[in-house]
Image (cartoon, rainbow, N blue to C red; front, side, top):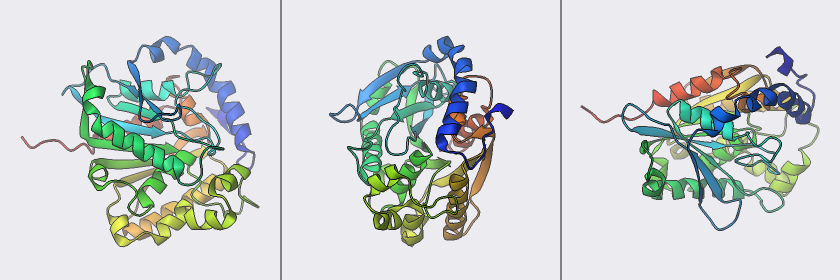
Length: 312
C-alpha cells in the first residue's frame, strides 16, 4: 500500500495513474471472482445515462439484504457504473465486493458535462432511488435474496459525495416517503467547498457545472449545510465520513470544514474515519484485490448494525 502514497499537492491525475498502475493488475487477476456475482441492469429513464446495475448476494441468513446505493465521482465530467476497457472491472468490483458482504448493491449512472448543470446529477440519483423503491418486485424477481426496503444506505465518493450531500440538503428535494427509508449516508473524499488554501480558483469542470463562481458559493455542499433549516438538519440520516490517508490537499481541507460544520449543526460529533494507505482514487480500485479493503468491510458492518429489524 506504500506504493499508493502520492504528494497531496499533486493533481488528481497523479493519484489516478498510480492507483491504476498498482492495483488494476491485481484486480484483473480476480476477474472471475468479480464476474461471477449476479448482476442485472435496469433503466430508470430513457437515456443511456439513466441506467443502474444491481449486484446480488448469493444468500443471506434471512433471505433479505440491506441496500447500498453507490454514487461514483468523476469531476462532474466523467465516470460510469462500469468503466470502459481496458479498466472495465471498475466499478463492477465495488458492486461485487459489497454483494459478497451481504448488501444488495446499486451503482447508478447520472448525467455529466456537457449535458448536466447543477443540480441535474442529484436529480438523477433521486430518480434512480425513486425507481428502485417503486420497482422492488422487478428487482427481487428470480433472486434468492430480496430487498430490505426499510434499510437503504447511500455512499458517495469525491463529487459523488457532493451529489449525495446535495440530495439531502437541498430543500424539499427528496420525497419524504423515500427519505424515511434511508438509514445512513457514507460520504467519502468529497469536495464540499472550493475556497480552500490549496485552490487558487475552482476547477474548470466545477465552474462549468455550477455556471459561475457566484453559483458555486451559493450551491456548494458546505453552503447548503450552513443554510439548511433545522428541520432539514435533524431529518438527516446518520452520517459516516471518510478521507484517504494520502488525500488531495483541497479534499482534505474541505472535508475537515464540512465535518466540523455538520457536527456543529447536529449538536453531536459525526464519526469520521481514515482509509489507511489510500490516495484519492485507490479505495474503490482496491476492492476485490485483497489489499486495502478494510474501509469497505467497515462500511458493510456499519450498515448492517443500523438495519431496522422487526420485533420478535
